[in-house]
Image (cartoon, rainbow, N blue to C red; front, side):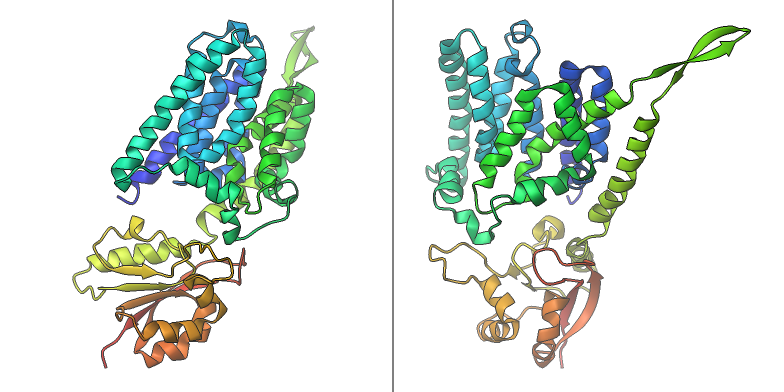
Length: 427
């Protein structure tokens, strides 16, 4: 149950790799497609993120699938089979159903297609509208079955994130963050190769798509790396083109049996580039995927195994951590009561949620919280708050059971070097 979703996502990611290869082959040829796939597989952020069970990962794969089928992106749009555009629209519609902000990508592509296609009325009325209505109708029906009432989730999503800036509740960044930090960190040492690939290939449509997506997302206050994940493979595809150009073989003269023959000499520049990319990306990919912030998973794996133990004493777990800090029930898979601090956005921006209150004053919050709690058998918290709560924990008869490494450096708040499990002991 723990591994199945990850295995499923890895298979979906493989489909994304396949379609990146196919798209690059159609646009740039076989050699560029191979190097585009190399870039996709070795980029540290793709390695770190694409196999995670995030809606953005699925959105990225659907984006690659759809881009492959759009006629407007092909060298000869009129030569593309008529059924391809239906596939492109279907994949795009599903991507929007999963993440409504995916519409940012498809507005750009749709306008390109509208200017390229000969029969604009057919494209809009007989293709876009029916396929969009079908997918939207199915999402409405699914939401009705799950919510028990008619809820327009895409509209609520857009209202919260765009029209009311609800996402700002979770933090804001300056307008240039994607350009100067976010996307540049994701692309990392592939940046010069991507820029060279854009200039050399002169594929301005896809380059424009990257600029469009980064530009629109920059208008929003709340920014995250994963929001622009769908355009990262496109940038890496340009890196593949650049590497292919570097790898053009040279024919060197060589004496063969007394005569003059030729041997293939691979570009030294390509070898140096590949070494540079591997040395800079592989260690970072491994560290970020296997070491950094691993404590959140390790603690849940420990609790999951402890619950199954015959001498199990776990009957209620309290997480005194920032909300959503662990995989929670997706790892535990047991009917054990658990609770974590609430961080539901408030309509009044000045109101602090439980998570913020706890981080602002851990001891005061824990003291007030304990007055009305159902005493847990175990408490999970980070060492940064543990130092302030040791006296509180001991006074309520909790002692340390297990400690797990979490991180070497801080990210968006104080350093959380380890995560600790405390258990209640009977006096």
